[in-house]
Length: 75
Image 1 (cartoon, one colour):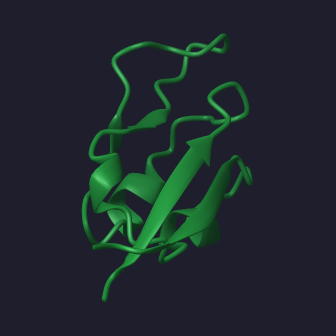
Image 2 (image 1 turned 180 degrees about the vertical axis):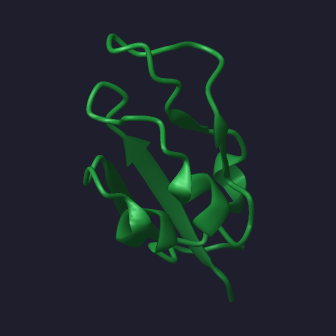
């Protein structure tokens, strides 16, 4: 069974490099249409149900503004 995950992004800490969007193998993340306080457009979770908690987004984030949680196996 596939793993199920959840991603939490600190929008205000993010500088909008979008490395996490490119690193996601299942395309969970996309660029937000709403800027944060510094004017950057951070990523947002577009397809949360697809997250497999692989941690790629966390690993590539230079600002450490992403948390990944494993929720268990998907049904």
